[in-house]
Image (cartoon, rainbow, N blue to C red; front, side, top):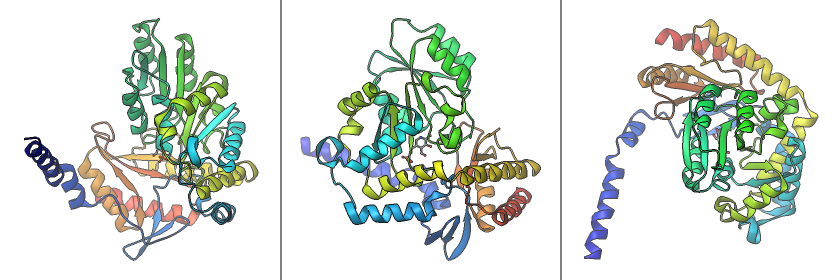
Length: 398
Ligand SMILES: Cc1ncc(COP(=O)(O)O)c(C=O)c1O
């Protein structure tokens, strides 16, 4: 009996995989999972053709910086490829502590913990602290890792309109004052490129006694002094309890970080399952992030170039009449409004040798189907010209 039930369940699962509509569409139109054959800086080779990468999160262009490459190479030579263990057991090394100390000092925080993925860091920043019975106030447009953290916490969640302090206030006004509250926001929203209205949101969080968590995956390296991020940009360091983010964007590595007080970080190390039961950040990736962090402080020209490129790129898109969803950062969406239009635009850019990423509902709100692009400090003026020509071509094809 138990055996036949198992068989039936397995069949249902296998059929779910075989018949899945979203997977069939993805395989038919093939907009995702393109495996590039080669890369050099912003040039990638796909199906034998060189293309300009316009969707990477390598904002400062450090993934091909000689010092970052050399640091990663040296770390592998000294430490091997992996610590093959979790941090609380056999996986901790002094290079983890050095990176954590450097990040904490840079962000003006007492302590920091690094994970092997930004997803883990950000998810644990919520799931590691909120509990059943707590109330989480969440911006509607949060990244998937924050929603996963919220779900795992078992706390009650109230969503407020994207980046809207008035709506947050209304939700807070009806909340039970006795309940522990967590405010969850992003510094720069990854799809939209919007900078959080931090002063107003944080002031409300403060007024209603919220523990505030900010995911700055896309603000770190981009905003603030030397790229210290959105919190520094608004000079609100003492008002945010936890800042988390990714090492896979401006820091040109993989992994993530959570920074806060000593108490919060030690609590995370005791209670967060993502922190306790996942293998430590690899030596090469820690070294790459450490070298990139150093470059942020010693080579300001990359951040300057990033903003020169960003201003020029957004102005070019606007001159073509494209909707950039009021982005204010190098994360630049081009909103097309339907999946068909987004696909056509994306295909036209690909035809012209510009690689971008299509993002459609439900990953974005209905009617906001878009092409997600991102500028890097590594893009040359000549590449931006070629991108402009490809955009003009794609506009004509619509
Ligand atoms: C806002 C945001 N948070 C967290 C992450 C997760 O970071 P990682 O890709 O390093 O796991 C991402 C990645 O896209 C992101 O955009």
